[in-house]
Amino acid sequence: MRFDGKVALITGAGSGIGREVVLRLSSEGATVFGHDLDGDRLAETSTLAGGISTRIGDVRDPAECAAAVAACVAEHGRLDILGNVAGIARSEHVLDVTVEQYRAMMAVNADSCSSSARPRSRICSRRTATSSTSPPTPVSWGRPTP
Image (cartoon, rainbow, N blue to C red):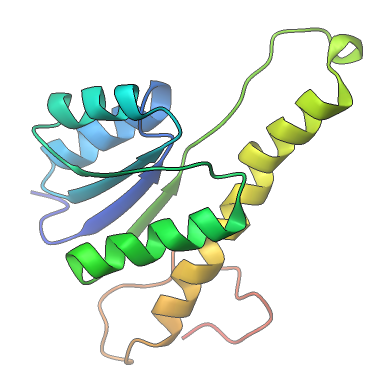
């Protein structure tokens, strides 16, 4: 299978695209660690995927993102795939969205990506040159990519 031996952390795993990513990666051999704010929906995803590791948490909190990465690595010994899939979509007209709603959307849809990628990138930078896993993004956060 395409993802045999790979460990994936997927945010937003409780529903929508995040759930579909979990199901697809699981079906193709990956060990998946699901992260979501909604524990009930995350448990449903785990059941549908045949059992995955999970963590309930809010990606708007950078410390939680780092803790999720650390928990995944502690449990599975590595992290090969980081899927920042958590997202908030609003259907209101832009003029009807409050500043608080906008900030929440940006915290989940944009800020959480760097909050998860930074600790993941630190893991990659500690790997040796013989590692078969490359960083998940070309962004080096100001340092040369390994």
